[in-house]
Length: 77
Image 1: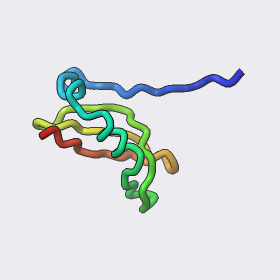
Image 2: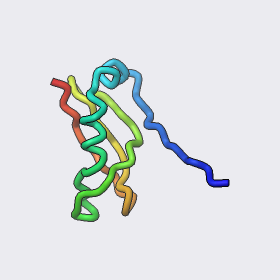
Image 3: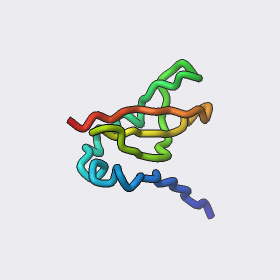
């Protein structure tokens, strides 16, 4: 039997309120095509954690191809 392995991101406590207000469609758009500096190409990002940076969210993940770290500031305003 195949098992589906889902990995949910860790959301830092200081980012919870902003995360609940974030446009999830916009977040998914970013995750589907984000620039990987190691691959030098647009890749899918596996979201690992969400943190708060000033008044915005910091999305931290890994490249779906090379496994390199990817980061993106998601502007809330």
